[in-house]
Image 1: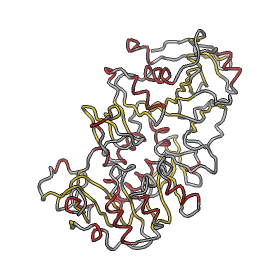
Image 2: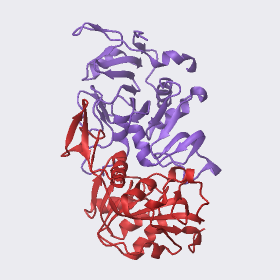
Image 3: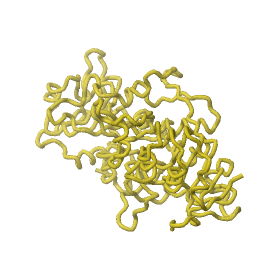
Image 4: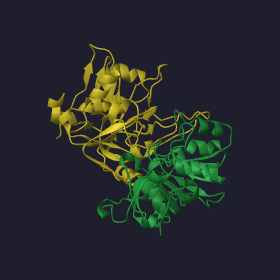
Length: 247
Length: 225
């Protein structure tokens, strides 16, 4: 497993839509993983997981084996997800109390968690719980536990705000959720891997690495490129390579 | 020794002003609404409430807040689409908020129930919620020192109880119930119905009776189906 990947630039199309982005994240979740999907956009990743993936969904209010949203007669006020939306249980599901549920997260037992974000820094710092606006009532929920607990933290967000300000930044200006915890960043314009070697672009959509580099204040480089300062090859193993048949 | 009550007002008798009250539930799932309604009638005030959320709509915890009985709330997620009661009190400066990450909130109560003096937790390191807290590096990782949250009273919702006070829960309504039951000096559980001692499978009991002082049998309460 030492494949050196090169960046794929999709220049003949526009940015990813929300559904396409969710499908891309689902593609990169290894089969059989235990996964927590955050509230909002990350929840939609579940719709793109292949039925035979063996992925088990965790919801931090105390359940493994969470099924799709409940409809009609399935709705049970005692069975909700972290967003308090009625959900269903799948065969093999289990229930546990909050201290156990968060021990599962904090203890590093979850393989992947997928979160939304206001900002991600080039070191993988995450800001997703508070805008910092003094008029906003702060609410953190399980965001900080998820950020530092899972083996891998994937973030889904648009790369720029509506007014064009980058959300991948040298330093987060919003209040932090966790330090150096994000390993992958999935955006409408590109997928980034974040690690000790810096920020690498693995895929672009409707733009190029060069164009991204010009719009961001963060140093980004294509996968497989030579880091001149360290003289090392930046190599990435694509986890989806082993289950490409799921695409 | 657990006492089974059929009158909600008797079930909450004796809760003192200034108490710290742990209230179960995640949103409305597992929320002990009948016990909270009885607490409002009982009149205890100047309370510190520990709960994941800060009330939904106008019932349950939201009604307790609206009645002006709560001085401080310790929770992880006060801001919700239907948390208008809390929002109004907070913006008017009429309620104090201590915001705690959800897992740390659960673990602080677990620690209280388990006799742990404090614990080093990795959650929140480097964030505003860890500001001013003692930290320590263990095996290269930084942790924040967190202290237990002990309740004078816990109000929780469970599914079925037996006459000894053993409890089982239902689906995600379990949430904070088992942890809060261990962390309070007086634990009061509302259950949908009570069965005879021996009727619960001992292997399936989630909260053993040692943690439960009073049970409110909702099946015997007037106006409850």
